[in-house]
Image (tube, rainbow, N blue to C red):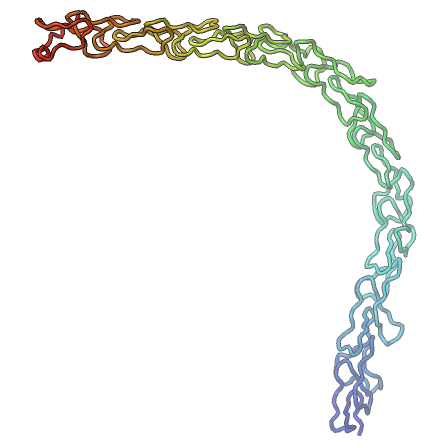
Length: 448
């Protein structure tokens, strides 16, 4: 007996018939199974309906799906957005077809949907695209952006996807139409309604962005043509009338004066430079070190004379401090007196030399006398020397030492007196010692 439909046996015996696998089928008496054709699938073995209907039991792909494979064992692939399948017969679809111009589809679509007015779609679109700003589309089912109609010049459509020409509105004051868009006028410009270009503000006026009129600058400020704001008159200037008719400069303050702030609107704001300063490049500047300005409203500074100096911003020169001097004109400091010289202060243009018997260190205001026991035989000395043994100096400010007299001696340096020999002994003038024999007997230490 032959094997029934949905089974097979290569030996033509019904005693050992096998079920056809998924994705395949057979008719009665077949020795082999055949694969389901493209556009169909079969996800079970054998057959369910084939004994009754006599067909192959392969199921056609659902509407909205497709498959170009043979022997498919699972359900067909769903169509993606922008495509559809709707086979005309029961054989199933081999492929999904792209939506045509002016239509779109979602996933698993059996058909495509026409775009509404205000929207368009190219072939294979998953959604309709709205007409851009400044355009409209009054018909449905259109497939190109070129189908969108432009609004008239000077008008704009601030929304996308619009479907009526009456949605186009005029550009407002302070804007103009550019490339099918309303654009705000820039700074220094203005416009009326439905403008296709902006006008420039005249001299002495200004505007911000999107202005319908220009504003006049207040006193103390000016503006060139096409300005976005007013500029303040700088220091040392003022402007006491409206800036109109192209006047481009502010009025200058008198020499030796300056304005304490920018944007001055009256000449009363010009103030005289104070002593110690002078007017330079429209500002009050302090006098440099070595210079001074004793009076207000100065236009220059005067150099300090020799013996005087000044620091920056001085209204008078100062005497050099004690122990210093200056010989230059326009000095900003004083030079320190060297060792052996001094300066008592005042308008010193040189240091004085210390005489013999005196000395000084750096920056001295007076010479110091050599102490008793010391001496200095030179001018401009910075120290004193001790009297040598056999000599002495009894008074301060000595320029030399005296020899010990006959009958006296001195065996140490820097002494103010000599020691007298004991009775019965003697010493020549300038002696530093007596004989050992006499020394062992002792000496009378009375001073000369």
